[in-house]
Amino acid sequence: MERLRLAHRFHVSCFLLGILIGSSSLTPPPPPQSIISLVGNRVVLPCSWKELLPDVAPAASHVLWATPAKTVFELWGDRTWQAEEFQGRAGVPRAALPSGDCSLVIRDVQIGDAGRYEGFMLVNGGRARKTRVFIQSVRLAVLDRKSVESRAPGEDFVLDLYTNHSTRVVFQPRNSSVWSELWMRGDEDSQRLEKHLLKEELKLKRLKRADEGLYRVVDEHGLAVNTVNLYVEGSSKALRVQQTFEAPPLKGEKTVEDHMTQTGGRGFVTLCVRLSSVSSGATPGRSGSLLLLWLVLLTSFLALLSSE
Image 1 (cartoon, rainbow, N blue to C red):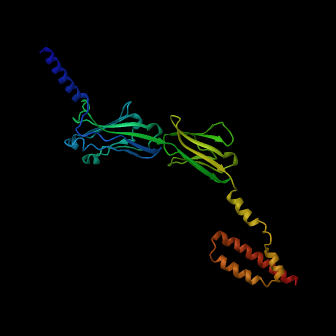
Image 2: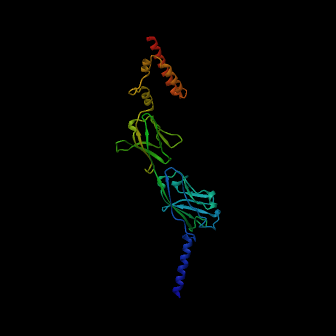
Image 3: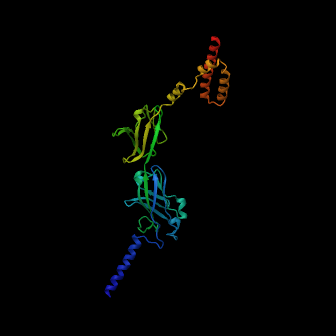
């Protein structure tokens, strides 16, 4: 008889302990979800409590999000709490709670935010009580950004920092294994390197061949945020324009002087008509070039007449 009473007390104690510190529901929680995001983006960790707790009033809802290591965010009534590293970045929209949406929104997501998150509802609405119901598990993966870009010498290169948590930019020249610090947050602008006043952008002006290589943006933890493989190749815009005007004629192609000499000036009218049709649709910059060509043609024609 004594053994039966002890067994009964044991089962009652286990039941009460389960109410105080456990979480239970007639409806099983949904399976874990996986979310992938690029650093600097806004990410939503989904969560819905209506099916698991249909009798809980939205006004009494107490939402808690945590990682295996610590609590990340809490919302109960008009009060909120955020972990230090999530200050100003994490939240659960109150307007969506009546519909059962308890999703955690993380803005400006960082590489260090990656990991497993679990959403809970504290059914009694009090933070001191440990009765909570597990709602959702989400595994978040945060990827850094990688790209390959090409610029011509003399052009500017804009490097995206993506987030105000980016603290440094390091540079590895082409055919070198040595990284050097190019920029640190708080540095003053130089003649060639300039931080945008409002945007998270860094501009490197008047590129040189020696600027070719890898540019890596890192955060306060030394984790890569953005890596750009920059190629400085080709000619600058000014040089390309000069080469266009100074390019020699192709094999078999007649120059203006050749055409004037061989036709005795008779082809001048034909050339003028062709230039008129081209210049009618020319841009302002190209119109100036055509005007110069008109003058060259006119001078050549007059010289031809005087020689005759």
